[in-house]
Image (tube, rainbow, N blue to C red):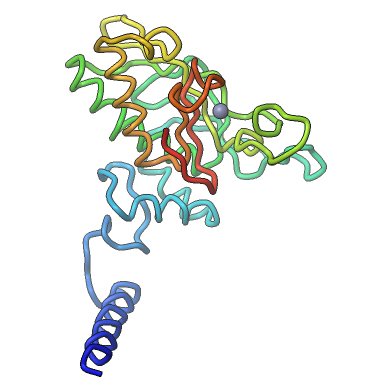
Length: 232
Ligand SMILES: [Zn+2]
């Protein structure tokens, strides 16, 4: 009975605290307030995944997060609903502090996750390993109207909604290139860097697939913001 009372009291206290934060009676730093918009400049924490998920159903909230990202983007017109893979609310990401091998189409949540990745996973890993930054991300594309692994039937790939990006490598400030295909199997600083980048990406992308996952990913990292959770 005493245990039950204690439990009910705890539920009450937590409930009042959550209500207080929601209604704005209690002030907590925005990064610890689940209802505050996500700020790309703030290092990811336990709430980041939740906040990223919330962006999927709230274009306005996503725009607010995107505005903090420093990415250069252009809005794309929605495709017709009859299209095989209709796109709505998509952007073309031109680059940010880091250049891109080419611009890519992105759903807003993908763009926000990419900005978080660049700032809080990619560049810290480059500074730790090389003492310099990555200046360009080489990618293989984001949007592709297809099923997973290009199969005839089965689930649509996250690429079909521009919610996934395939990254093949990076260029460092001193001109050196790091390639997933060539450097992942080696036993050197490039290989270490790539593993650090892969692990870091799991903080902001829901699915991260590297050459460790299967042979289809031997030459790139697949990063997406879809409903599954895999980090490998
Ligand atoms: Zn992919």
